[in-house]
Amino acid sequence: MLELIDFLQAAVSVLKQELNETPISLTAAEDLAIKVLAKTLDMTKLTSEKIEMSTLTRVNNETKIKILSNAEVDKLIAKYEKIQAEEEAIKKEKLAQQQAQQQQK
Image (spheres, rainbow, N blue to C red):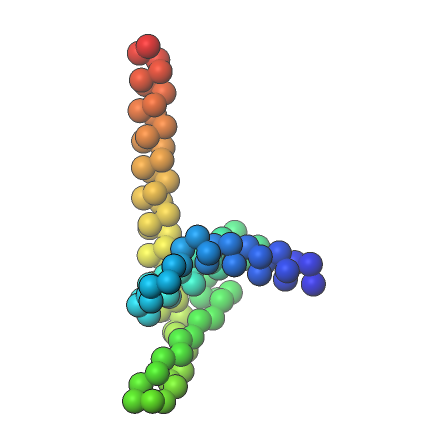
């Protein structure tokens, strides 16, 4: 039970950081869902074998449920991992530049 509470608190924290009052697209919501899962689940790597995703949308005043295929989930995970790798590379580059500037002083 405590693990569930920790998971929910971490998920809420990420959502508070990422969301504001403006609506987001379905694509952005899917990306955010992957980010929340990656940051909160206790696993080393997300895979479509370990998680399932679905979407609820309103079309012509009806709720439509779509269960994402493993390939769709894998694509979302790959997109998230690529963005994370790019952000990490930028952080490392900035750190290296700061260290080089400090050494020149």
